[in-house]
Amino acid sequence: MAKQSLPSGARQVADQHPEVWKAFTALGKACAETGPLDARTRRLVKLALAVGSGSEGAVHSHVRRALAEGESPEALKQVAMLAIPTLGLPASAAALTWIEDFTEGD
Image (cartoon, rainbow, N blue to C red; front, side, top):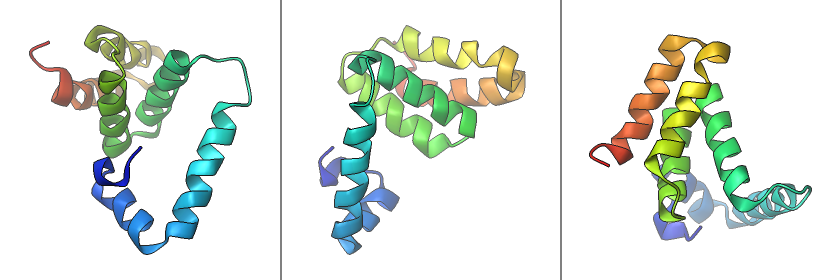
């Protein structure tokens, strides 16, 4: 991900601590390459992890990237729906609204 498209907090870390950002991105690449999951599956899993952590910013980030990579809004919304039995309706409904911040009207 190019620095200019980073959320403000991540961009600040990248700008102020480039050595940390370089290590962080290398770690992410290494983690992505550790197993057999394809890019689409990894993206949906990362969105699910963001939903599970309750991080609106992380959900927004993964939704933006998924849409840019051609993922369907319906698949992203299904991630929030799949979270209902595990996380509960309130947490999943919140995540759905965060996803719809970028998919509303689709």
